[in-house]
Length: 355
Image (cartoon, rainbow, N blue to C red; front, side):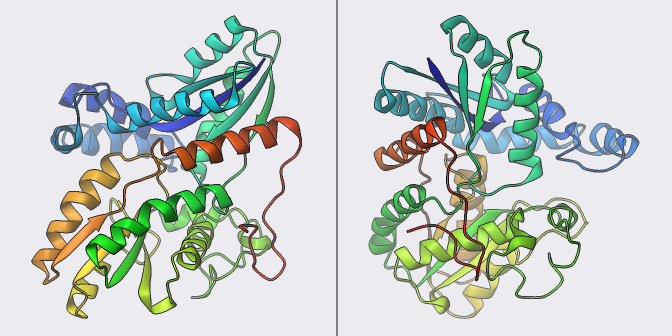
């Protein structure tokens, strides 16, 4: 039997201060997430973040919590169920979170009990970052190594240019754009500290060196989160028939005082309002399931900011969640990686494989 392990970042068990504190402690203790020296990370976490941030974050979680619980969790479970139906009885599909529940360890144990000897691993992050994909894979490899009979693992690579994913996002977004009569589109991705992006450049001579470093995919930026985000946006813009002046790429969720990758979503919102844009449709293509960063940060706070700056309306394009086309795309990736090595993105001349 073949297993498919879907991994997302994680969510607190409840929208309470205590639960959020436990979640943040696990999340922010990861050296791939807060990539500073251990003493500095301990002091930052225990003296600055954990005493104050959990209460504020819990309040934000309560705004998006539903009768089914955390949106990230129930959308993930719905996706796992839909993909399982498509793959059939010879597959077992499990959802796990890198931090919190359901855990990667529990998923591996369920695979073991079911007799799964080949696990296809899909980190649910379209664009590669060490703090998301890298951390999830490290945890998977560590867990697999603890078994006497180490299972065979096949890892689905970054799918920022996967045609099925892109088609599904475009299909979800078109009706929102039409209903809103959007006069501009934002592609807002989760941000990262600049230093983490620069670490992905093994050559040390490309990432964030020139203004156009992310305009095409080349060997030097093949692992660059920002470059992959730009590639995703370009592919979506093509599918949505958007000219370059019709959309803006930006990055949200920055924290602290260190430089994060630019442009910043909150600054772009004010700039677009000042430029006379009135109705914004916002895609968040770094997230395949709606969560705090989409529903609260963009759907509530960004909308309030844009309207206060002079805009008329801002509409969040729902994420892929468990949309049938997205479930089809995940099942197709799983079959492809289970059977043979999958094709990688083309890097000659900057054209990614996304027919």
